Length: 388
Image 1: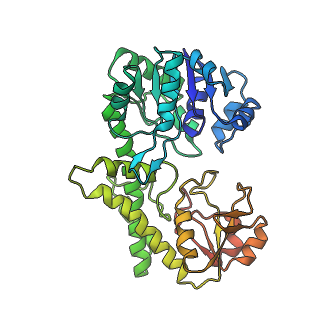
Image 2: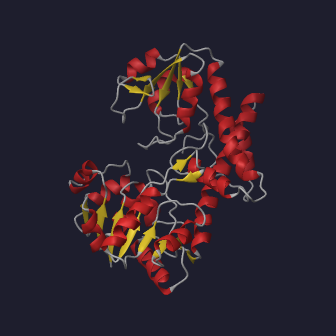
Image 3: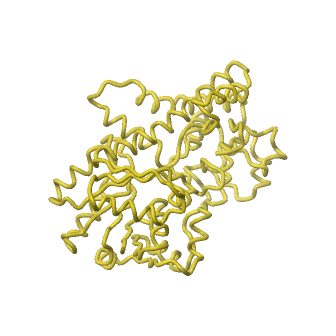
């Protein structure tokens, strides 16, 4: 099989490399610098498996920024372009997806698309009607930042938003390229597949919000949050996973997916979905208040990323903490080694780590790292279990 992949972020690059093990792949991105890096086997993303795969010489993959070449190449055209959430319209901005489809159909009216980008519920059917084609299929992704290719090699499940012979063939191809055995495969209607994606991520946000509120209660009452969480997690129906408190759920997916699902509930009775979104704001308010109460002159932000071993700080919750602290007139400085800039949203970026430690009265970090051990008395974190 031949696949063309459009958009080489976490989702697109992970899919392209996964499929290139046994199938032929043409991987497209509009960013020339990214394509040049990939052609030199340099990963633009901090992901161990992606780094390792790019060093292999047995993969059938070619990186290009020639759109027409990519369209003509593939039996299936995989769309993995970004769909940011538009706060004004309360809707995903799906223009990048539509741009690929519209331009590709001019070149190949019979092109078959597999959408991997996250989209609103009902979107696939809507654009099939708009573009007058049945050749648009949605297949959701369930990937972690920094573990995107690993989660494709060992997927929790494979879901194809179409019930047909070709959908089964597509599922078989993804399963064939995975390393995990006995993968759960589900073929659904397109709208149900879209709902699965949004409800899955919103449940994860719910779990984060739940343990964060537990932690807020414990810190407010002077209780040991770890003891409570460990005791709660011993119930096998709850479990001891995905329970480490944080400054709020962040990253690229959970904030926008929860807001999109809330928007899809506009005419449907509900309480929980909206509360999940609001809980994240409340948590950031609480964390900021705890830091401000220490009366620091300078607050140091150690890493803008949400997770250890990640280079992605899009929509990280710590940015919300920064804004709240700065609004009180407190100086905020940043230590972020992946950031090549003198400032980050008008906060100084300190390149020298020792200078950063000396300058900061309080060091705020979402996840504690050993490098902070010698200034532990300055550190404010809610990281209890030392994992993501």
